[in-house]
Length: 246
Image 1 (tube, helix red, strand yellow):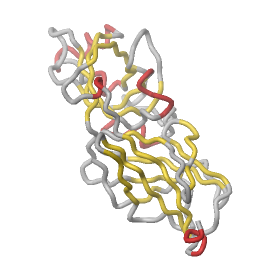
Image 2 (image 1 turned 180 degrees about the vertical axis):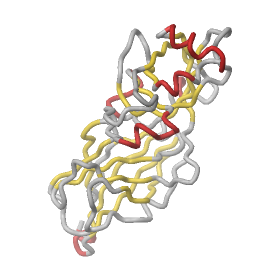
Image 3 (image 1 turned 90 degrees about the vertical axis):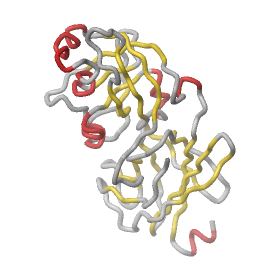
Image 4 (image 1 turned 120 degrees about the vertical axis):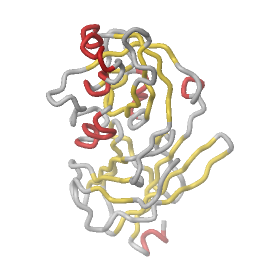
């Protein structure tokens, strides 16, 4: 900690955990049900429980979803799934790839899809019929998130209050990575406030350095942002980490 104070760089840590759970396998589908929610423009919602704001409305071209048990107290925010319905007469073969941006529970459903995402479950000429179902049988599997042209970004949440209270949201988390908190000796952990939002009070002066612990089946390694959060950070601004997770 003496090093951090001397250089006016405050070290924060979160942990990135790659879970080896059978239902997340690239090859294994899990059976469930899905429905959709109303939206004036068919995109997602900016008020989702993950705290993504506008990012949660438009990421992945609005092909997003709220989930129930897959939310996992916010750990599931930003994860990606392939979802396809199972009525061969009206359902498209590949279905849709979605990003989790919200929490929601329906009629024994695991997914509540944006209208844009829900429409892609159907064959082109059967979209209206699929919407008339309301709830459909599906199968899903977890897939790697891919964001061409984007590094991992950390956005200062709009509720932050410079310089005393910092709240950040991680965006464009590629791969099959789960974000959890962690406590490590000279590093101070951030608290999961809710969803994908992490925060800390009583911030010291100076720039903020972020590092992430990546846990694989074979062990763990540290990944540190190549860019610091500047000392004059501003609420609502997204900062590039200049790293990518796979």
